[in-house]
Image (cartoon, rainbow, N blue to C red; front, side, top):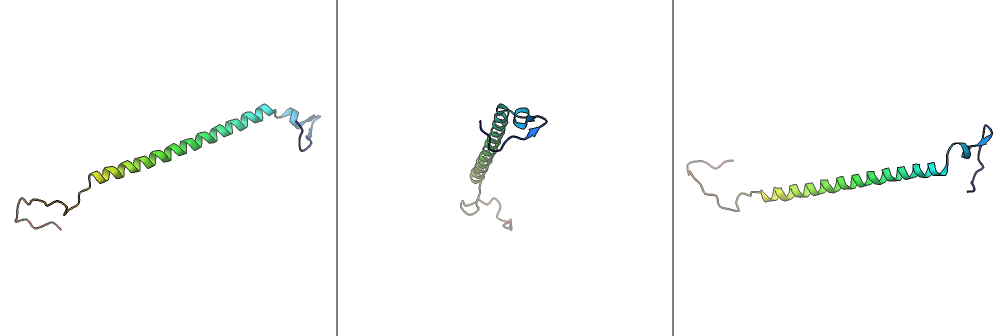
Length: 84
């Protein structure tokens, strides 16, 4: 594989020969990509679950919503003043 820049001389050997092999570089890049994909997946699932939970809470809140005035309330005692 041709290099763009010539390798540096380090104590009689070239830097490319002594420090890193292409397999090691590929493995490092692969591990970084896997970590980033895992992080993106975790953030996506977390966001989706939070949105779904908020929708469920909104739907549940509407089910138990009570609005005064829509249904006539029966008064048990007429002597009590209306609450303010």
